[in-house]
Image 1: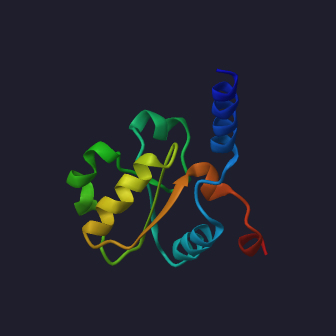
Image 2: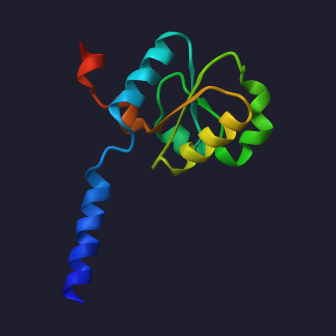
Length: 119
């Protein structure tokens, strides 16, 4: 039982301190944003109201298929959510519909300082 508890604690710590998205993806997403990509927050309206990336469009995952007409397939899309799970689902859905998508997982990842971006 002791080893299971230690393994569980180690796993939780790993999950808390790992980066959800790699630096290369973040750099590409930031470059895309500078070139006109739209940021889409796929969390619920209440999560969006509590805190969101400035200028992000709130299109909750559960209603995303019905909201696709609000997006232009010629405009790249950056998606994020609270943990990275919903944004991963949204990215796959949008890619299947022909969108170019960058999944930056979370607002914290989007705001994470990367040396190449900071310079």
